Image 1: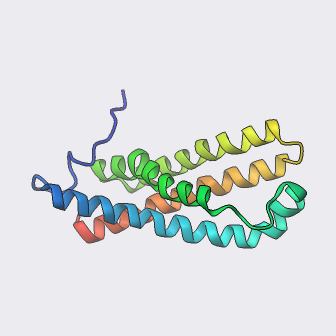
Image 2: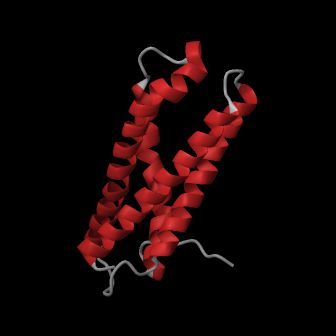
Length: 156
């Protein structure tokens, strides 16, 4: 049976103090957020006009509503930390960071894309497939990057 990961258990060799644990958590969060946000911005910039706009057309806003985007980009890295990065760090397994990140991205993006495919008339199979693959890769890469940073900075 899989046990939920706890960042407190083995994030270093000595028993962590509250401040050292908070610094590790902050570094891990930023190490997920930066590649996730950067790579997704590039993806949306490149694919916005090539994939999303032609498919979604008139249901797209002319200017994005940034508040929900800020909430999403603030919360999503926490999910990657809890479900991919910390379990991988506890086991010391890079492959676990990659696989769990890919799976987290797959299932979260599948939820969004398949719901949209079910409810929005303009949503297509191509858009669903492309976005699910992208979400999987993005989450896998971001989790892997955070894993490497935590190993490099803290020797975890």
